[in-house]
Length: 574
Image 1 (cartoon, rainbow, N blue to C red):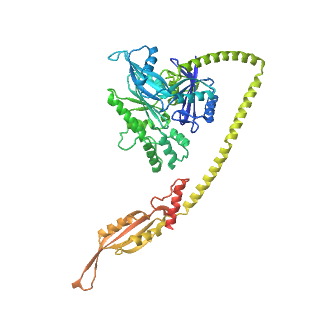
Image 2: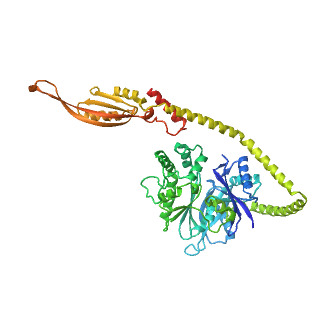
């Protein structure tokens, strides 16, 4: 039974599966996922990169994947597709009919494209009996060539090239019998939406939103205490960094079980959730589009890709879409090797589907050439096995073990020398970060709440009306108490409102107020009374001597910009 290694190269991760090729019940023997080197892929096109070759070779080596036959599945906006209805025709004549009418299907020049097709549904009765609903797919030859070159540089033989949309459909079409189901493959910057029913693909859309903005928000928010995107992603997988709804108007079906440590964490989770709003709104529009054109609405949603790894995303989608959303964890008709466990199946659906019925962008001429090379290689392998077996009888087993260990030692020494400069930079970074935190903490410990008293007195002098009498003034570390005298209550209310607008005060509270009458003459016959109002207000300074908008962050190790603003605020107080 022929095996292949199926590979999907994304912006963040490379996913590999060693499994059976084009069989009814395929078996997955091994799988692996490794980080994608930076700047090696752009809209599906692969750039010439030694780092990418090394990453794939090391993944194959470390996971003991020895097969040399490779299948790639590709996601790219350069791959164009269109659904058409073909009249009754024999399967072996369908390709000829498509090529003869290609200009009617795609009104553009496709001379530099490879064309393939997938039969989505063949109608058995009704007005369309015998007709077939077919998905036509066209990929640029330059895109295909980039994967052929990569396979060759990795020592692999490219036997097929599939489109991610078809890979997903082939893998999941048996999961939905009579119930319309939506499959969401959410990656870093792209989401592929597939609706299946009765083993047929009813709709497929690609949207240019993923979880990239949410990852950036987690990395940028000091409440989560991470610096780089890769650390943010590891945190997102471990704990829920999002709420279960975009806003309070959402009807919550799946409750939020995550307990926020403080208000800062709660607000940070709200911000991360809002970063997912464009993605959720785009998915919701596709749901509305499908439901408005079909009598049976979508009843279940499955989540896969990086979205399946994002903690809490399935609850958020359940509440916002109003449809139960689950992480994709099983595939009908797929056998996993017993020694490998279930793994994170939702990450490998496209790899698995690419081996079942790929659209095959490889031209028929190249396929014939590959078949001949495969037969030649099989003969060469058999001869090689014979001679190796004969040689092994004469060679010492210990020598082979020694050679293998020596090669591994050289490889590890090369890796050590490569990463040594990075280790030095990391150690210097840790030293500077520790020094900065110590200096910032020392600076914050010198501040007192009543450092703002000078600002407060200055504002009193500038903003307090001349007809207000300040009878008493007292102050401690946190607050100042003022007893004042004014003509009436309206004036007193205006003074309190004025104090609440002082930049140097955080809170202003009224302690007491009373109206007083005093005689202004000693002659009882000519007695006149003066009425006035006395009141006491308690004014709380801004903490640590910082004005509004300039408070230092409570998180030690906050960014340099906040520290600079804090220094400026201190200078204003002094």
